[in-house]
Length: 288
Image 1 (cartoon, rainbow, N blue to C red):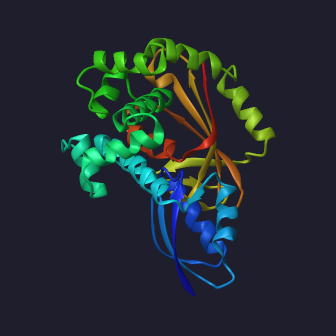
Image 2 (image 1 turned 120 degrees about the vertical axis):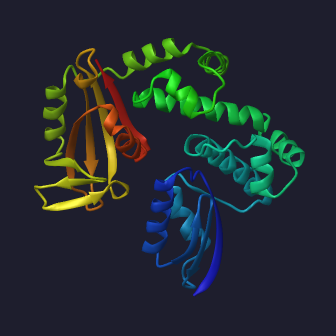
């Protein structure tokens, strides 16, 4: 077995790590170390980088060989990690200090190389990614704008709103209205259930502690082991208890089922974990 170090572009979340690990192992490689953007494997002589690249490309991942590209991807991953740190930690860390510490180079050096390669400053890239996260949280509809501002360490809702409009060209309220119009699909929850059943989502899932239970299969599944193919939210009335969410769920074995939950404050953490499983190709519809 030969050791191979891989640098991979477009790995952005825990799900990406799981996909890359599964695909490398299916090719016969032993994964000894795996983090976002970086993998070390031991592979048989027959397993070449071109074979690995072809397999990973089918999932949208790109293997990097150029040192400058690898460096820029490392900066982007650190920006993503900083955003995650904003939400998960109460500790205040300056953006420039975080990048310099994690990458191990002077911030001015980092900024200069990023601007030269990408045509924008690393600060602008960070701001754009921060606004992208605001969009995500608005779509999840579990936090109001004040809570989003606190979660992402904006100094005020006003500052969040002004930065959002400067980046996107529209206000937060206009964006929410566009999102509602574009994502309108099913008239009601019953119509969505009927359509899912016709598409083969035969099983029923229920929340049990931190897992999802399927009594039809006599089995429980960790959230990370499931794929959320689609989810739809229904604001059936103005009361919070009238907000329902339907998730189209697929197991690793290809079995399909539904989870239908009433959205409420006690389940916020659970829905955050579940929503994190939605990949880039999933369909989200907000139905009124």
